[in-house]
View 1 (cartoon, rainbow, N blue to C red):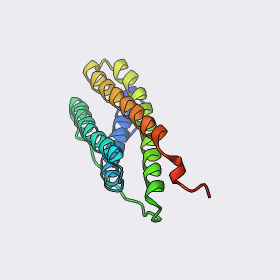
View 2 (spheres, rainbow, N blue to C red):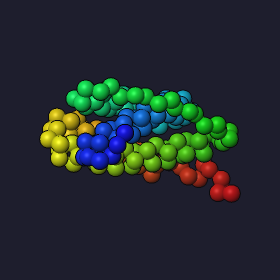
View 3 (cartoon, rainbow, N blue to C red):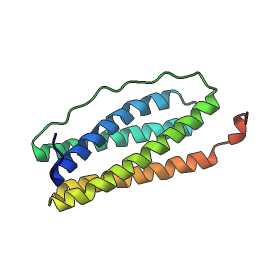
View 4 (cartoon, rainbow, N blue to C red):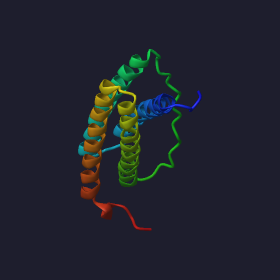
Amino acid sequence: MSMDTIQDLFEHGLEDIYHAEHQLLDALEDLEGNTEREEIAQAFSEHREETQEQIDRLEEVFDMFGEPPEKEEYEEFESMDPSQEVMDYHNMAAAEKTEHYEIAAYGNLIPLADQLGMDDAADLLEENLREEQDALDELKELTEEFEMDAIPAE
């Protein structure tokens, strides 16, 4: 794919976030299954549902271009069998990092859609951005409430 125009940049950005959302969808299922705390598992479950809705909206944006998106294979990484407390905190931190990436990606795509006159696409992307910001806020609350004393310092 060439990268000569705003549309090229926009399409590349769409492909990038589309693949990231699919990876996150798979990862959230794993995170939910590896978490014993109900409130954390519930947050991952709710975010998984939102992520699927965001993928659906991204597919609507792809339909506006008349080209179907392609899904890459997601490869899981091996775990070192940490304690459940370490796993829970790690999972929350990983989810927060992902939210920051998604917020930045949507924040960069919206002005491109606006520049292309794609108001409907911009509206869909703005909805995804708001949901990502809400998910980040919820994860931050869970992280602040997490009992760090449950994890050994050394």
